Length: 402
Length: 136
Image 1: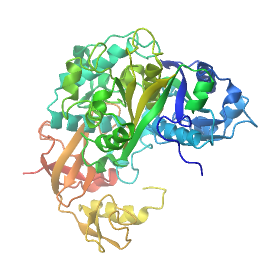
Image 2: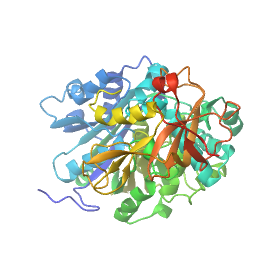
Image 3: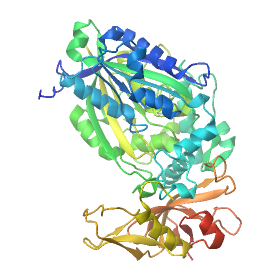
Image 4: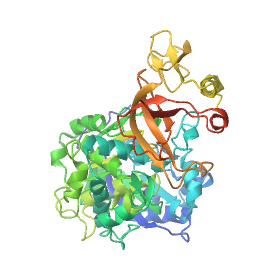
């Protein structure tokens, strides 16, 4: 057993490439086409060729069990011509936190020499699928069928349970919560791949939209979207040998599974973020005050505000008011969810967390484009959460290079 | 109810609900109450578990009122409210909330005291869930 490489070692895993397709409704983009197109884009951006990839880690799709089976059973290996070359291809799945867990798996494989170049790839067709079918499908993904499904619990209701508790605990107003959605829209307007890049949004519009699940209004619920993201990782030593100028290392990692059933969460306004972040910051050797940006799961406003607070990026109870004050908007003190997040770039299922992680990597590589690149970005706090926000997973990313 | 072989847990619980009672599990080994029902005690991992009546009183941690877009089969229920109730027995669960006299849930608030008030007759057959109303 090889020793796992330590911090800053040439053996440690680093990100060298990112690929992404626009999010939204694209019924003419086939699922498999999105997967291979985004994979090829990421591999080329990494300065590699497809045959250099020896391991593929799949992020699941939820729109179709048959398409998910294709991911499990190595169809992408064959589609990319890697049969006989790829060492392994498998699905990692923990819902919206999958990307964090997939990166940990990739990092371990690379650091122990068991993989050289890893492709992490995701595509989802939620935007093209019938909404009703997707609502029903979701009730079988993380809602206990023996104890909670009978109540009629929906994922919007899960978000509403969290949002109401957060508003109660923090004293945040409906205006404050709407301001979270507006800030994310401001970022989405700077992202050519965002579903809502062309649609401005105001607090008044959010508050005038139809009540869906008290206290959530229509424009506070995420819109299901098609999308695709891919990431390429290799060792730091290999990145250097490839002549790369910049790469991104995982400086710290931590997690906390705080429940399975939403009815068993001890504090819906807190979840597992604080516990998850302690270990991550300790490993990284830096703290929230050192972060240049954050990319944290945001399928509902309070999921994001509780995340930012647990991660130490806002005082407890203050995050929504800080959004309203512009702290996390373009031009604000701390850029948050610079791609527009799930709420404004589009909820691509499990891929929503992957897209946030990819945006963090892109920012630290300096490739986020002229409109939204954070000047001198060196450190990013990334967080994902799966199911009914059962877990809080943290990756602390750090830009590096020659 | 389910296709996962968990009838040994679901049958006693839902039978009690149909009788208008709320029961929770109890571990004889460590004397803790358990909810949701489990195959082994989540505190001591022993498997000698029995059922006891719940106090039925508790605090509403949070709630949501579904008005639009329920899952299939719940179209006739809207609007309806679900809430996370922390029972005084040191366990918690997701249940349904009875509406106020005006048919809405405006008097409910986080941390309000609530009490189990089971549904009867056809309603509990149709929707086997624990129902709560505001205490007092």
